[in-house]
Length: 300
Image 1 (cartoon, helix red, strand yellow):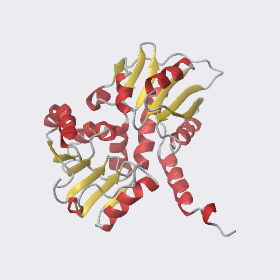
Image 2 (cartoon, one colour):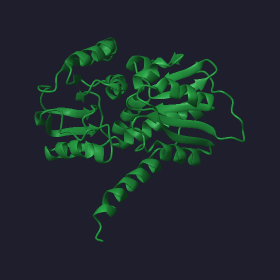
Image 3 (tube, one colour):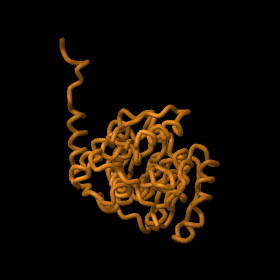
């Protein structure tokens, strides 16, 4: 049974945050503010940058100041898992956590990334995973969070491709029993020869953060392929443009961001908000920002 959150003073908003480094770009405060308004919850949700060598201390300070829960993003998801006095089954399978909830027993560590991605792909986008051939690129915290739920949707085959095959093999090994139980053929390769014409290609690598070229050859895409980058906005655009240019239907990670946030919100507050209006508002906001004139380029 999931532990109950600590009781909170009725007059004060419950404190939540998102931790990362970098973190200034995060849309999570806007998302959770919209969820709170729609569900009548009184919360405060902020961005908090943790030093690369100081995540544990930052979380301790947050708790000391009354923090009741937080989301965790790059590069702290593995450290967040280690802070859990208790962990959910999906966090245990991933070995990583993107959501912490303060309880009387300490932090409860959860991972809502995979559930968020599956809901966005299968419900919002209408892209079923069952019976498909899937290529998952990357073996870090993002890939660890989505691999278990991906396998749970029973694709016919899932190939895990990473620059370091040893790291991919280690991640696959922790999921092999689950893959077998789900009837999925799980294999590992490097980035040079992952295979041909997958039904679904998911970029969970850090390549988009650095604006790098597509990490895999174009042969992974076929005429009916779908391609997803777990980043969103400008960071995802290069990969999405590349995939679209090779005939794939594309989707960024904004829907996953909103859906995993809803999973976190439900964990903390006991109510799952409607995600559709929040996702649409964010898409409209990003579209408006994309066409906004750059003041630095304006005529004097």
